[in-house]
Length: 107
Image (cartoon, rainbow, N blue to C red; front, side, top):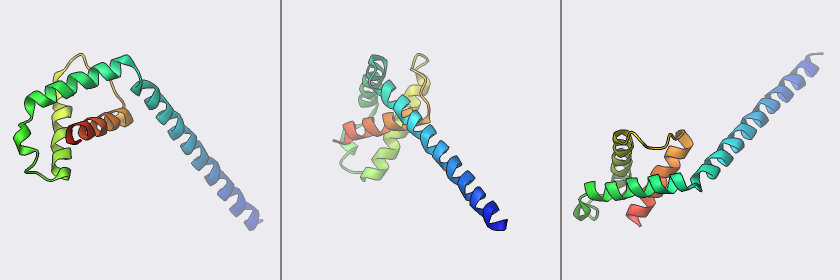
């Protein structure tokens, strides 16, 4: 009987993990759907242009990449906070946006 309980507990645990994975997969699908919209690309271009206005391009060569990525993320967060019209993003969408802009600025 104890063995049956242990097996049932393992099955329940696996089912919970599978539901977590399905939920994450659906979240990623929703993020990917949003990332191809016109609004996303317009917002990203606007942030990118504002970022280039704020950044002193001459310092890009003097800082290491990790520091630059952190600073770019902070600036993008500030730009998004200042823009009352920005598209609302969930955590995964924001992280993807930060990463894309960092990659574009750093080459």
